Each structure stands twice: as structure tokens, then as C-alpha cells.
Amino acid sequence: MSQLIEAWKRRKDRASEENREILKRLQKRKGKQLDMLADEVHDNVFKKIDCLDCAGCCTGIPPIVTKADVTRISKDFGMSPTEFESKYLTMDEDGDTVMNTTPCPFLLTDNKCMIYEIRPKACRQYPHTNYMDFSKNMRLHLPNASVCPAVFYILREIDSRMR
Ligand code: SF4
Ligand code: SF4
Image (tube, rainbow, N blue to C red; front, side):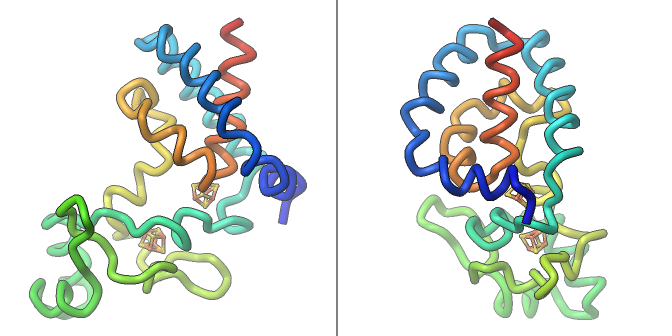
């Protein structure tokens, strides 16, 4: 595991107030300029963090699975959408359809995703810090900074570059 991920593990539980303060500052700068910077910082941080050393999202947050995801994945599995839904999906407390276990049933022991090429849209978009997604998903960054080391470092790098 990388030193950055180890350092995040040591810091994350005591960092929620600091994360809140950073997000309060960034909230005031929401918009295209912030999103362009976030996209650049996202790429920089993910050059230093390998998701295969982490799998925090796949082990900690059941992803939302849309109807289109079900159609695509069940077809690849040679199952009907209904069979796929009853075997792998459930409804969460917000009424969203999600994977029925954490860790995800498709997470392999080497942290690879068994269905990587056809994974749910939510998995492809996580952690919502690039492609002009940053400002739109402001409310997700606080909880995600405790799940995803990349978000933790992305917030800090954006904050220091915006000052
Ligand atoms: S489908 Fe793949 S990427 Fe998505 S949570 Fe499961 S293992 Fe992770
Ligand atoms: S939690 Fe973040 S760093 Fe970890 S695997 Fe998921 S996206 Fe990658």
C-alpha cells in the first residue's frame, strides 16, 4: 500500500473539521474555474494513488445500479435482468437500487473489478472529482474524504492552489 494511503488512514478520522472548512471555502468558488482546476488536480492525485492498493469504495459503499447497468451486465452474464436483480441487488434506505453486499460481489481478491469494462455508471464516475463533476457534487466530497484517499488529497491540493 502506498505511503499516501497509509498517511490518509492515520489522518482521516481526525480530519473531518478540516475537511468541512476546506469545503466551505471551495463552496464559495463553485463554477467552471474550480471544476477545471479540480479536473487537473484529480489527474495529478490519481497518478500517485493506485486504486488497486485501496478499493475503499468497492469495500465501503454499495454503488447505485441503474436499469441501463442491469441490462448491460445481465446480458453479459447470460442472465435475465430479473435474475440479476434478485441475485445481486437490493434497495437502500433512500430507495436507490444498489449492490446487495459490501464488499461488492464483483470485487476480486486482488482488488480488481470482475466486471470492470461493463461496471455500473456510478463506479465509473466515483469519486466525482473530474470531468466538470466537482462543483455539482459538493455535498458528496465530505463523506467521500473518509472513504477515498484521493478525495482527501484532491480537496487539500485544490484548496492550497486557490488561496
Ligand atoms: S462493480 Fe466493480 S467497480 Fe463497482 S463497486 Fe463492484 S467491484 Fe467496485
Ligand atoms: S476509494 Fe478512491 S482511491 Fe480508493 S479505490 Fe475508490 S476511487 Fe480509488
